[in-house]
Image (cartoon, rainbow, N blue to C red):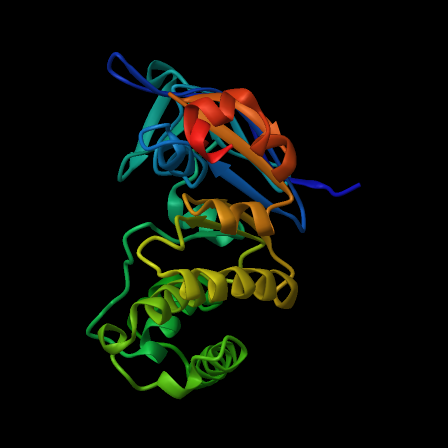
Length: 279
């Protein structure tokens, strides 16, 4: 049985009177592809933001690789440390920020591509490598030593070769076709050395051929980099073809979970998301 790499327990995220995520319980097994689907506004991206440290949940707990990375603490029992980071007064436990969670081995992409478009393909990947610099913080803030710089350059080049982007190494990211910009964004996430890769609508804006190529690419990097993958996606063909397990949200609540076949034939899913005509 696969180890559970990521687990959410009773996660709720509320903004004023709006409950965006309501009692979310998800388990992501190591080495599998898990999908989160649902109509627009169902709470999928909010769930990703809670998991990756963008939001402190209103209620519940997130555990990654055996470590609690997100949990609700009353602010009255916490002390502000710096830049919006808090710790509990009695346990001295720091609430993890997105950069700390990345260093633990979690990386994500976004629905709207967030590349440094005026930098080259190589430079985009190299910047991501800085997440795991071993040098002291003060020294690395100004420069790397020659050994570190050489190692990072070699690793960035190797990654570009592995994912078949090396021929675009010195081109500006903005000059790449849309599908390859998506691929570069995933490459940048891979450069952080993740155990878990979260993909937020990776096929958004792609044509059918690009989507088919993306499905193969996701399966290839899962094997090549020994990844666990958690994705949000609206392209049902992609989700159904590559996912080991699927969770379905509607208005923040989980209405179904299971294999592709189980989800496709669930009446609640057909009504809420797939639609009767898609049955």
